[in-house]
Length: 217
Image 1 (cartoon, rainbow, N blue to C red):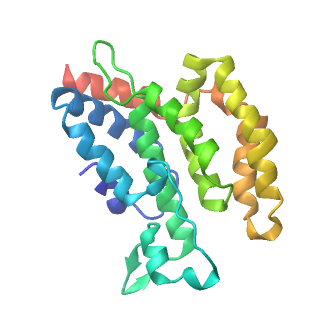
Image 2 (cartoon, rainbow, N blue to C red):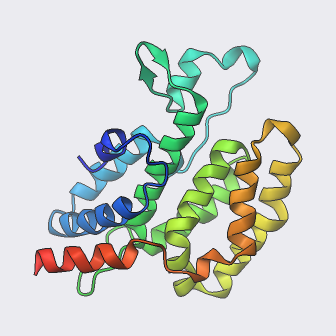
């Protein structure tokens, strides 16, 4: 049900921020009560969006980039046809934000079975193994936008080294591809670094915790 929220949300909502934080809070409370549920939740994340693993599937050549390949990497069908790349990327961002929201959620007195330490591993693996392409750029920015504040707060200088890797290697690799990469994919990451967004508490995080705290008290 948590994962299906991405599909059932208002399709015009491309941010999926505030709702993601509320879902993260609920996911932690539920999986704390039913620990085995986390394995099923992660499996569902990985099934609908490979970047929550994280992993990437390369097409061997242009001919291999067929309908089956696009289905395999997560494109959904709409009215018997594959969705557009724009809609696919919107969904990638939403799924990664939902995953990041769960990872960064902390509740006093509640043990997190898949918390910031796992988010840190995810980020390191992402940058070490995935190529710099539009889809990974959007996924990386989505994760940082939601979990970056919490990761910076916990890991400090180590997190800054990760951002340096993004600045010196990931973004230049995107730029080197020229017109193949939509400017938004680059600008999102560049602005995140230049404006030091990781120092700002994400919009909706505190509100979600306050509202849900009252509900569960």
